[in-house]
Amino acid sequence: MKKTPIIVLLAFATLCFSAFTFKNETKPSLKEKLSELSKKVEPKVIEWRHHIHENPELSNREYKTAEYITAHLKSLGIEVEEGVAKTGVIGILKGGKPGPVIGLRADMDGLPVKERVNLPWASKAIGEFNGQEVPVMHACGHDTHVAILMGVAEVLSQVKSEIKGTIKFVFQPAEEGAPDGEEGGAELMVKEGVVKNMDVIFGLHINAQTEVGKVKYRSAGIMAAVNSFEIKIKGKQAHGSAPWQGIDPIVTAAQIINNAQTIVSRSLPLTTQAAVLSFGKIEGGVRSNIIPEEVTLVGTIRTLDAGMRSRLFERFQTIVKNTAESNEAEAILTIDKGYPITYNNPELTTMMGPTFIDVLGAANVDSNINAITGAEDFSFFQEEIPGLYFFIGGAPSGVDYEKQASHHTPDFYVDDAGMIAGIQLLSRMVVDYADLKK
Image 1 (cartoon, rainbow, N blue to C red):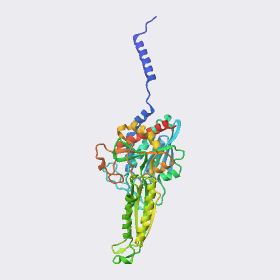
Image 2 (cartoon, one colour):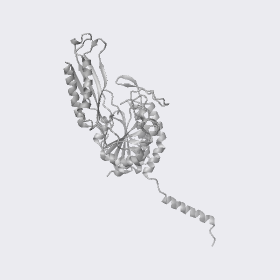
Image 3 (tube, one colour):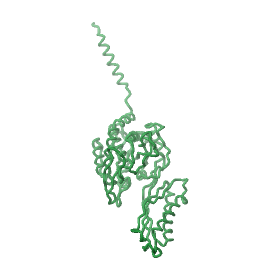
Image 4 (cartoon, rainbow, N blue to C red):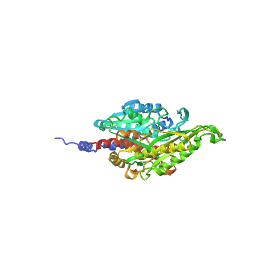
């Protein structure tokens, strides 16, 4: 019998060892895959963000943005519904395993603000807002929200066979409010049935005063209810040299403004929650020597407690009516429906707490921030189903966060580096919620 050459034996041993190693090699978990895929898609997300930032569109006019989103979702093989709530886009991704229907939301609209930030991809866009030609800018970070959700769609589409349930990617128009005389935003999406059969919804907002890589949220009320108001004051026109011959709506307006400021400070239990009543516009008169017949006041109300909101409305009506009557004028106060309180479902918030820590680390998670008097129409989704809304950092590391330009201003800026946290968190929330949902 011939002896087997030593080289053949070594080759056979190597082959056996390799096969054994491959067979016993630990495959990456789904969570590990999501992390790596999020990092891989980040350069694309940055590119998408720059394009959207450079081409902003106003509320209910997000036509090109919707086309951009739709093309991307279709390229991933995701089912797409277009024209939802006028310009909204819904992407539907069905996982390979049974499970809940999970909504992920990004708002799409820009603002009538002229950009002052020196960027290669700064906006030079012009649009129309309530009949006026205006500059347009993504002055609140919605460009990053859209790009993040496009990235999440790409990540999850690559592991859909391992996903439990169905994901609905909700690209929502008109978060900043529909133009005068139009419906829009989350409220219209709810009306059109977007949340029907949806178990839960998650949303985020990038924040210019929070460091990149950090996340902030709280259970229960996180953002205020908002109500706009208008007061029409009717007096009697007269010559400015003889005010006693008329009824002065300007003096009446001044007294209403001052008297209304006592409502929050003297009629509401401020140790319960914060509240705000602010006047933003006064309109009336045509020249210096004519006391006008009518003056209009416009403003905003922010509340974080339903009972306090009712009390504020009641006191405001009383003050407006009685102050006007004391001047022999007539005043009509109209308060719109507004947005409800952005309310994070406590059970859902507790459930997802470990996800924030696992993805970003405990040092980068603040789960007990103070409520914010800004408002969000994400609240309409939360009125229908459990929802969780949170903030991710957009301020470059090492800056003085308090000196960062605020949202809705010409100098508003958030760093591209902040978006990876959003991609990773939303992707993981889909998987973790489906695993925890009984």
